[in-house]
Length: 229
Length: 229
Image (cartoon, rainbow over all chains, first blue to last red; front, side, top):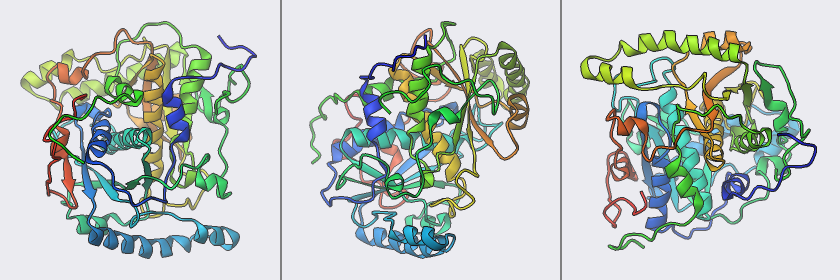
């Protein structure tokens, strides 16, 4: 099936969506229409989940006071995080915009309820955290549906979960998996911001693929990246 | 923005993909062309990742002997898993087909390398497992791209990671996140198999959405599911 010719340009819109999706940190204040938000959350809800447990909840945050408290949490944590880096790397870190909590019209906390349909969930006994994995799959559905609607999403991972739970009154058994900023973006960059800024390069997918066992490479016979990458 | 009228039918193909994606366990033996597999893996590789660390690898398994060993692993583990359920639930469990390891032309182990671009990864200090979360996002990209190609994916979560690592010679620091069966499906069911079988119902997305804090409901004013759900 492989040939020396480059593969044809792929037309299915999913590829364009996937390649143009970005982690967005700069937002217009324009609100997200209720029906658009509902479509995106419904797309999220149709992700696969272990034992069909659908463990997710969505806290839609619009209250500026709650956003301000989360922003404070980020700032405290980010000062600590910056200290991990040295020299030029630290300088670059300081210049990066890592969140859009206040500007984004909607913040979204996506949680996982490990007890849903429990205690025994089909398929979850061997690898316990497949409930959180399922919640991540739902987040990627959300991210792609948002992109299709022209809406940007940015994941803020520099937040302490215990404090975030206190702000959002999340019960002790529930796991906050993602805190997302959601809104119409100033722009969708053509490449990831961390790539453009020189923080890290895009790896070649060919180097990440093994055949039958770890470390065993059997290169794709077309010899390179697909044309539309 | 909300109204009493049902929202218009949404045309973007991403929704159709998301709603028609299934966890597939019944496969045709027909092989997956090399260029199609490459497209799907490239789509996976373009998922978002914490600090742009791209922590994933893909082990493409076609060797029948390796598949047979993984299948044995599943069978041993599944016997134990079945014991967690009682009565009618156990009976139903026994009737479910939970994997297609031998039949699927390709098995795929997706792993996470926590050391990539490390030790300090931008955004990963606060919630350490965001590297695994990123790997899950990549799996959902893969799942949707596969669906666009008419290819089914089934996640086998009933496998002990330590034994799977031994079979696939995965080094100690690497985390196997998903073991997937990939191939052309006998069919894409219109609803999830576990829903059809009566294992668990589809939840209403409205009940999963809170406003500003946990437990606070502010229903969408259209009052129900979007029309195309």
